[in-house]
Length: 297
Image 1 (cartoon, rainbow, N blue to C red):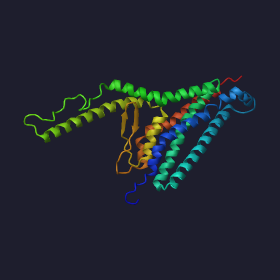
Image 2 (cartoon, helix red, strand yellow):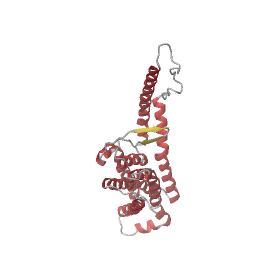
Image 3 (cartoon, rainbow, N blue to C red):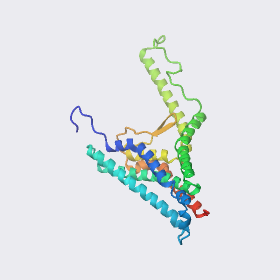
Image 4 (cartoon, rainbow, N blue to C red):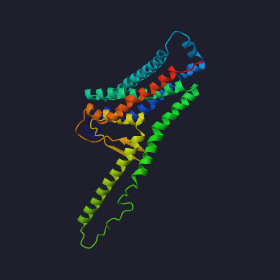
């Protein structure tokens, strides 16, 4: 217990949850930087043509590129994890056994998230004629699936959901503070509370419709799926409640006292986890098929 008057130290899971967005951005940038030049760079330098002139199978080359890139990302994630935990322990934040397991699982999913963008970069490196086009294609795909599609999904959802329910204090006729004949102050308060609850229900129903459409647009977005999975892993009280503010959606950290096991939490976000598993496989499959049929002269 901290001394009286001293603020209680935050949980290490709370710190990592706050850092998850940074992990996502830096991880995506690192993955793109490693992958975009693997094939296109060798095509430009002519070394790929020289390599294929030797008795070596094409699938060995593309598989070796993928394994080497994933190994580099894994090493970077290991260093990042050790540094983060070490610094927090020096600051007096000691993880419990459950917290340490959750942090390791979170780092594993962070690595899987990085593989997604590495696979995109490798695919673009295989398709593009040079490295400039490869990095351009990769960044365009990154921006579209991570930012444009979620915003477009929210906009389309708002159009399909109809008019947003008006707040009781912003256009809806309210009870006059002075009250009417035969209406007591307590009855006025009860009526105001009833109106507010009705508005909350209408507003929740409206945003449920919006979020249903937005999730369809974000189904192939590793970033959105990673955010939901990381919330499930790092929050012991995870209840999978989602709200949206404008064009930005987030999975809330609820204040539930009943802890949810990591397996139960992952069961709530199994769809998001499935996307993180399948997405890099699809991107690599495209890169593999293209490379096996590539005409190198």
